[in-house]
Amino acid sequence: MDQHRVAGLGNLLTDEALWRAGIDPTRPAVSLDPDEVTGLHKSVRATLRVLGRRGGSHTGDHMPARFPGGTCPKDGTPLLRRTIGGRTTFSCPLHQR
Image 1 (cartoon, rainbow, N blue to C red):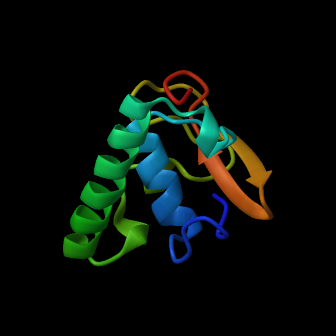
Image 2 (tube, one colour):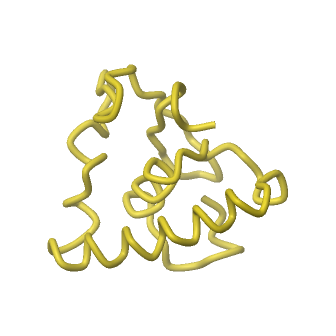
């Protein structure tokens, strides 16, 4: 979520990539193990590719649930809405760790 590390990834795209990778947006990058870094990299690339083909970040699989009271499209768990680094994020407390 920190624009100082990787600029240009907005809230919607970042939420989608982290959701797909199963990584909690509050986790510092240094806490990720090598497999998680690899998974996140693949997730960012795949998310950019898929959403680019669909017409933008507002077309993600996670997007329809990104509202107060929304539930995770993968497992139906109520999503958490938080502000991290001044940015609003929605994440699944069950599968995003």
